[in-house]
Length: 293
Image (cartoon, one colour):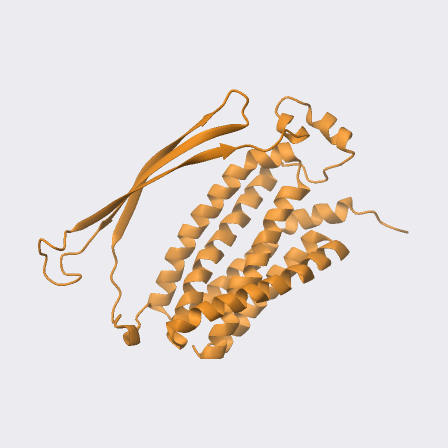
């Protein structure tokens, strides 16, 4: 999948890697500042015949130590820093805000599933994006492509923000996922690993997909009660991480057994599932919106 004869990479080599570590944080009595320290040891298990016969200069395992330290400063105290001790209803009433989407167990599970799907899409898309671009032209064009993607994303964000202000944010995000899934299918139909195809795929996966990912997390952060949403953020983030691991494995298997272009079908299915993952919020949005006679 990642062969690059022009660069001398004629085959893939797989190495098992792992890491272990931990960290410690200490806060001052006023809880406004503190110190932190982190340590991590990473190790890669090599292959005896990966780069010729095993010699004293090529050990079977390679590891490195990473140590980080720094200062931590917390933000100023706001009303949401007292959510744990103040009644949620009193806080909402004080802010004059209502929350039409309570964090029910079912909605949390659906949100976790959607986060896992997006995590799988993100990792699989990065693998396909880089593979397609690096196999269609010289690697020296990658910095220029990254600059163009940044400009494209910067131009797309104001348009996305204007649509959210004019229409319901949940509908805009859901429509974006549907359009992205359709674009993936069109890219699969015309996939030929040419330079222009690689540029379109790169802009789509690195630009538009990032905006949709940001839109999803904005929905979770802004449309749910802060107390319930903050309690569920850990599980939602863990689901996204697990989805990313599954997405990397699925992309590698599909590209190896079928073709790299077939990964686009997987990406289309994942963004299509994201539309269904947002469906409970869409129904709640329709139920909460005022109707006119």
